[in-house]
Image (cartoon, rainbow, N blue to C red):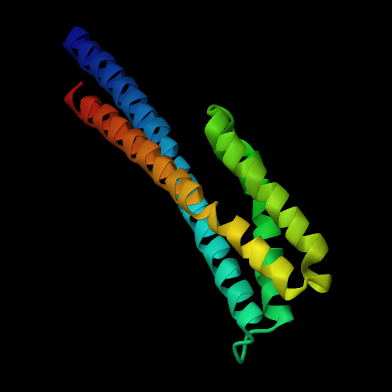
Length: 168
């Protein structure tokens, strides 16, 4: 009788250890899903860039309610987002591809020049800046799309791994 109880207790310990292992593996896979926020960050940066471009255009056209302070606010928001593109997983993602890196470097350069020139910009300079900004619209949107596609792939892989854990 003691042998049977000992065998039952040992098997319960083994099952408990196995369940603990599965829970740990599941949690590890779920933590990978937090990277999904990178595509959200890139899309927010693109959205803010488009807002900056629109506000700058409105200021150049003299649209009522659009002034220098609003453009400066949008520019400051964009400048604060630059660090996101250079650090962490998102920085690694961008650094892996020379084209993506070139897009980000062009964006940083353009924003730096706009920051320096905004207070003294003439209408002609504003038009040139807007033309240059419009050349980044497509590449930035493509960058956001690529980031989202990579995140979807990561989510699908993680989902498959979690499903496999349920079958073990």
